[in-house]
Image (cartoon, one colour):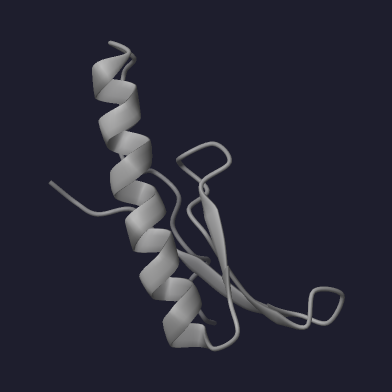
Length: 70
């Protein structure tokens, strides 16, 4: 199984790093460093999947992919 794409960016407004998994609705995390945000979103991903499984909801297949560099 392919894994989910993670978008990682710095937010001036929040003064920290945001990690987001677009294929999993509302699955994102904050960190003061890129590594912290990534670690936290991986925890959130596992919780998201576990919650969906317990509720009998489908888990989407990874579809979001970055735009290739030209």
